[in-house]
Image (spheres, rainbow, N blue to C red):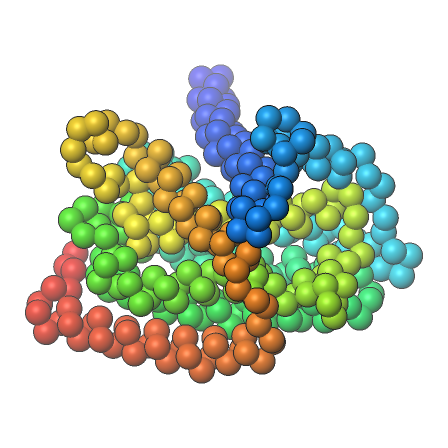
Length: 336
């Protein structure tokens, strides 16, 4: 009986930890959409959401309610099981990736020694939801959008992986907490600035953000892999996409911007909790994401592939060699 109570206590504690993370992430997605639209409006000198609620803050809630009450239509020629599973897979994989993101030295659901490998494994599976949605729709436009997305995500995951090797060479650990603590004296964005720039651009392509939103190009593909979706099934794709964008911003903050570490170790800045600093850094990177969408025109698909395979891949490989050579020559390689 005592063992059963202990097991139940552990289960409820884990459920509490999961909800404590996922609920803020879902709320953040809604707020991030509002911020995204406000930034576009500011850059283009027009009004963004400003009617529903103060400053338009409740616009995302209104959109969510619209999706909840909108009819879900499944095409008669679609593979219904896979068609329904696709958005569920996309959103689930986007949310479980947050399990290893540390908001402070102690605020993390799973502090595992292979946190980077976990993120790569889960994020690599994300493309399956998009392929499932495009293929199950039984329509050529969603299918072409899904194929584009698969090629794009695979191409830029290679670059991101090699960029992260530069960070791992400096740290000697796959644990995200260790990566943050290794930046106590110097954030990696300074010595690895070219890699930070390539990481940022690759993250745009990885999350299908403009100017790399070719899987959703409305000019030739209507809306890409989401064309046949409506209601909450469409909203789940949308939630998964923005959760992935926030995840890439969080990963960039941890790898290059010191994670939860304070940039100013003087009073009163030293009193600000670490998770607040991490949130500020995530918001900073997201604002850059939004500015790129408002400013940079869309690439052609051949330009996108050339940038990934012929420019970013050789550059990131060269930088790995230079980083390893520098650390080895000056005897700075981390030891266990």
